[in-house]
Length: 156
Image 1 (tube, rainbow, N blue to C red):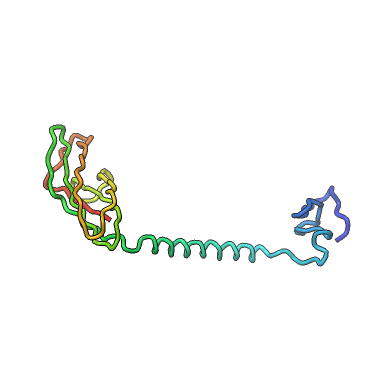
Image 2: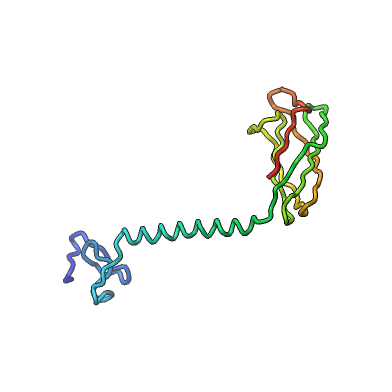
C-alpha cells in the first residue's frame, strides 16, 4: 500500500488502528495477502438473511408455544346495574383447546367494539372446562348510561 499521509483523508485499520488509504479496512500487517473486505452488498445481504431467518424462527416458536390454546367461547351470564351507573357483569368463558390456558376477554357495554371497552385476562382455564368471572364496569365519564341489555363479550 505504501505510506499514508496523515494530513490527507484516510481510514484506520479495523484491527490495530494504523492509518490506511480511504476505503481500505485492514493495514498490510493485518492483511498481508491483501484479501478484499466484503462489499456493502454482501454485508447488507447477510444482515437481511439473518433478520428474515430470525422472523421465521420466531414464527415457528410462536406456533409451537400457542398450539392447543383455545378457541375460547364466552357468554354474558348476568348483568346488574349499580347505583353509580356502572355495571356488574358475570362472564362465562369455556376453553375449547387441548391444554390449559388463560383468555384475553373484551367486554363491550355498547354491543360494538370501542376504545373504552373493558379488557381483562382470565386465570388459566383447564382444557374442555369453563369458568365464570365477575367484573365491574365503571360508569361512563360523559354522563351517559350503560345499557344492561347491550353488553357483549369476546374472548381469544
